[in-house]
Length: 256
Image (cartoon, rainbow, N blue to C red; front, side, top):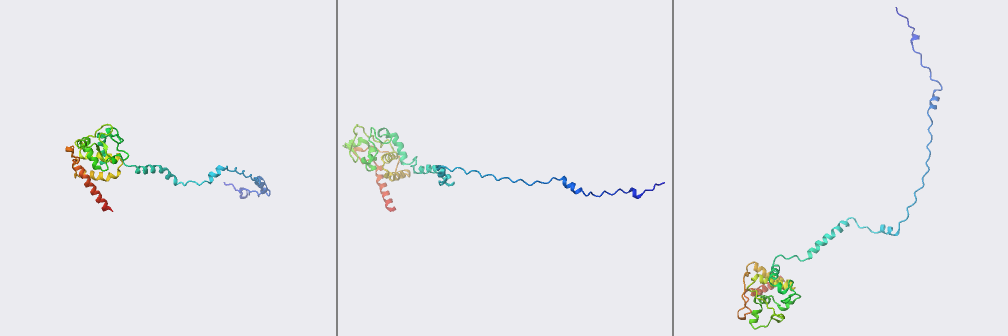
């Protein structure tokens, strides 16, 4: 049998009305925020001491531009390269080089390694040009030597009449048989140009050397001593000097 339920008794009681003091209590629970405290301004730092005179001068001095530094670093290298272009290249071929080899082997023992003289006369300071103004006469002397001149009844040689045998009685050997025409010409021009300083004869030397290279003059030719005092018996080599001079003179006229 069921029980009767009272509707009023079963319903929950309504929530009590908010108290009139509730807001005040809530407000009291939150502490009030304080106003920020102002920070007093700090004093500015003292000014730096003034620069000394040398520091001021250094700051005011004009500075070298940055692009100049690589140029300055490269300058020594460039200078070395430039000086190298001014130096005369070492000769390792040609008439003067070959003449130096022949001179060292056959002439230096009497005339000195640098042509300064010894048993034989010196070539330096223009001395060789005073003795032989022309290369042809120099060649004839080297080919024939002192004996041929003496056999011809001569007691001197050269343009300045140097005594044969000099002050010590040394005689000039005849190299016409020992040396070929190529060796003899090279040695003579080495003595005249490299040692004697007659640089103006270099074109003649190179012209004759070129003809030798092209077979227009027999470079293997040897020369016997002059027969019966024949001082002109030096053969083809001396005559070729005159021809070469004529060719060079014609070239100079054509170039004007």
